[in-house]
Length: 152
Image 1 (cartoon, rainbow, N blue to C red):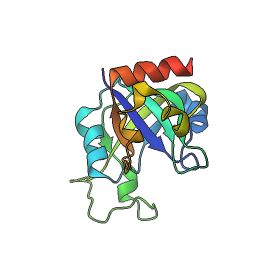
Image 2: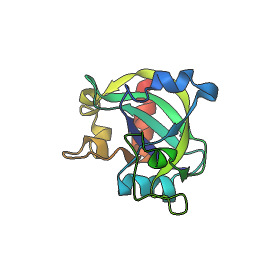
Image 3: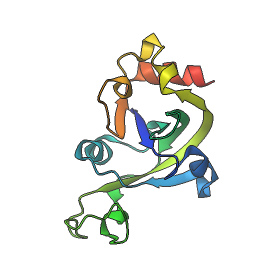
Image 4: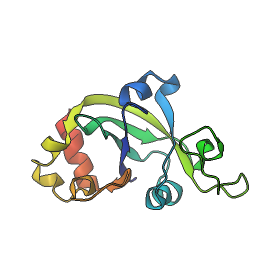
């Protein structure tokens, strides 16, 4: 089992949206970074743990816990000319971008980025590194355990 931190802008998809959706499940769409895409395509497995992170908002931080519940599949937004995620180079035969389904398992208090920075066990966490902008990053088992403990 692996662990991930996945960033979403709450005005696009929030933890509340996930928990209110059918089966508390949502497709993770709109990833347009090759490294993040490769994590989804090549490393994520059904059952992996997810820290659902709100980004690009007044108070960024972890807003809940989720899990991966599907294998990767082509992101439909890459083919939709009306979508801000449209990619003219993507084809049905050769899709460029991936989606994966995520199921919310627990909405938590917000563990803010500022609070995360004060926790020694998280000092090496990728999201806390200067210049880190990836929307999906791996989380170590020790980091996962420390965060889950804080959120209880």
